[in-house]
Image 1: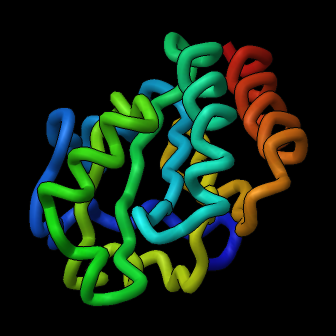
Image 2 (image 1 turned 180 degrees about the horizontal axis):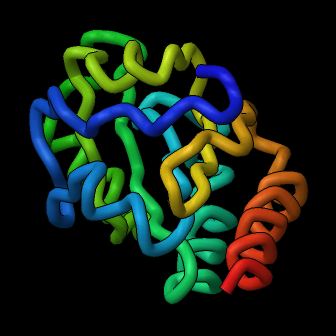
Image 3 (image 1 turned 180 degrees about the vertical axis):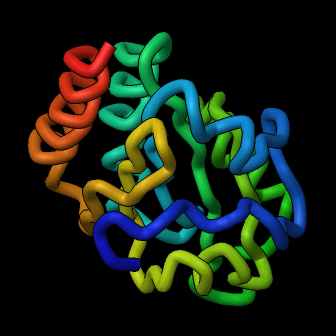
Length: 151
């Protein structure tokens, strides 16, 4: 995806965990962070406490949606995804993308990967890898500040 592109529709999930959300529910009120992870991704698990802290810290100002992106056939076991999500306290909605439909819509090849959309649903920041929480926080704050200043 390129910056300023609109958020793709959240369709094609093989399952949703922790509730289902649509693009319409996410766009319009507040910015959204969509993060891709996988049960076989060690970096994802390491980054999850940071993602969760982030989710909790910004819960009133930011939508957070997880996308489970399988990296192998072993990664499509829904029971295992549910178990790992619970172990890592992933309470936000999880789009289970076992057929890679959303992964393709986002043109994403990485886990973990983070996509920040402004409240109008335009992509404002994208990053991949486990170490970028400071940069991610900076970008989210920039989008939130723009929104606050526009009110």
